[in-house]
Image 1 (tube, rainbow, N blue to C red):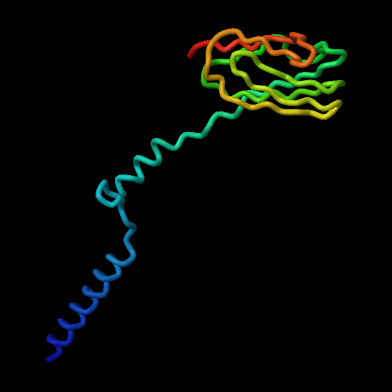
Image 2 (cartoon, helix red, strand yellow):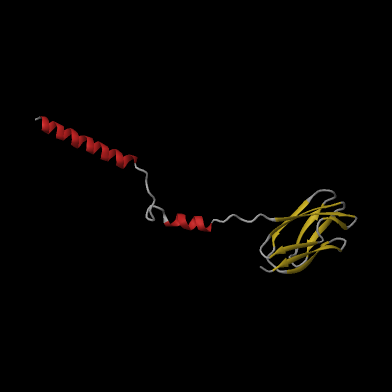
Length: 138
């Protein structure tokens, strides 16, 4: 009888230990445990490049601060921040983008450089060229 009890205790202890092992063991990841779309999403989610920002200041219909030639690469996101001492309109030829300028209030023009070449930007109302946008191919 004692041997039977001892044998039952040993079986019970082994059962408890095996159960604890399976409950507490760290889980290993396998290819089957990772959803396929998770791998695809991680590979395709790239951070978007931040826009290239250029600040221009115009006084007396002349560019007094900022680059006269804005150099970018095709596909770049561009932001032009401009302040003028007169009411005007900044216009970029070729892209046909423009923004109204109010006296001494910063304005902003944002777009993607998807056309390559040299494009004049001017004060539209006074037809005053103040610079050039150069977009180089990738």
